[in-house]
Amino acid sequence: MLKQRALLGACITLGLLSTPLYADTLRISIMGEPASLDPHKISGTWENDVAGDLFEGLITEAADGERIPGVAESWEISDDGTVYTFHLRENARWSDGEPVSAEDFVFAFRRILNPATAADYAYLLYPVKNAEAVYTSEADPETLGIEALDDHTLQITLERSTPYFLDQLSHYTAYPVPRHVVEEHGDAWSRPGNMVSNGPFALERWQSQTRIEAVRNAHYHSHDDVALDRVIYFPIEERNTALNRFRAGEIDVARDFPTQQYGWLQDNLPDATQTAPFLGIYYFVVNSRDGHPTADPRVREALSLATRREVITEQILGTGEEPAYSFVPPGVSHYEPQQPEWVELSQDERMARASELMQDAGYGPDNPLELMLRYNTSEDHRRVSIALGAMWEPLGVEVDLYNSEVAVHYTDLRQGDFDVGRAGWIGDYNDAQNFLSLLESGVANNYGAYSNPEFDALMAQAADTQDLDERGEIMAQAERLALDDAAVLPIYYYVSRNLVNPALQGWENNIEDIHRSRWVSFED
Image (cartoon, rainbow, N blue to C red; front, side, top):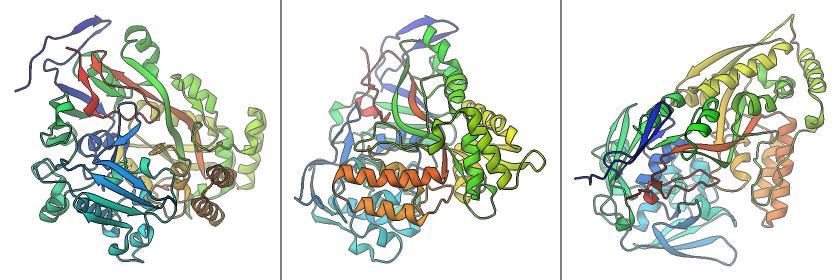
């Protein structure tokens, strides 16, 4: 039975902010319905909020986002940086009490890199020896550079030294999965009643589009350090709905809030309203596939020139976002973000150049260009999309807006059913490669299907370069090339936005906006 604690509350304008009646239960709104809870079948930040509580990799995250030991309590790295030997905790257990073994990691890595799994994020593991060859069916899974030396010793061999590899191992692509359960239930293993996980919490139930409930995992290796008994995740795409439920005291954390309410929130809920720098980019994909008008680089550049980013960040949003002219955000280690050559032009000069490009491409007021623009459900996404249509209208562009919930939206992007599509990317690790890899040919999350052999060659050269500064310069060349091609349409660099019950302890802002419920508790 959950412990009952005194209800903490404070009256605020038009609402009541309080801790829950059962203060050992954290109620959090996430930004959409997960496509799955199988770590190999997900690709969103909202899914990471849940999966990161249910599972733990070799490396995990502290409250401040720093990487710390997870299932692995220690490790050694070879002098050339290509061989990692991990020593697993002997008390690491699945939620059914079975030991977490090195073989579970071997099984998981082979599974996510099996083409039949169709994992969108499989490419994040390409640093592992033969990973790409296994994924493309050019090598047998047994040749993958991962080996269980014994039940508690795991060795991973890389293609080359990869400075960010330990950070990658905290990502859900590198989580273990329970071989004994997957082999029994197949793809149904991650459903309630079947799912077994190794993180601080275990899945109890999942009501689609309503709530996901997880309870404290009694077999977790640091079980005694977990304060919460239960976490309830509410998938709420409408930010205003999440705000209203937060004000009513129905949830303790709202992941994101409507930017148009920022001023009111600062005045009325200053202790609950949290913003912080964030390693992420808000952008629009431009479809480079044949048959789409945006396959013409002149059209893509014209759209970018006509986009008034400062208007979007200052007048439409106004919560501290910075206008983005590069695809890689500032603050990335060993990297200087690039910008297109036209960034120094005045807005009038940009529009004149954009009009010339559109005319060269055969479009103008007398021959309007019709574009299908897709965005996922959010008042902010809608407002930005409407603004883009208005900014492009002087070029003779007519925009048809299509809205869908987040899972459907990203399926449409992957299938290429759009001309322009809203997207966002949050850094999985602090390295420019994590962003620029989205523009490499054949990558699943390269929604616009941009393909440039010179760009790909530069990224391959960077992967083979050991000097971090030299490697960064090579990737900068690749980014300049992509910006010259107008491969994507960067809009702004994210700030994290959360509403957090002031009675919560252990919620710390960090550049990746990662918050594991393991660290959270309520004031007594």
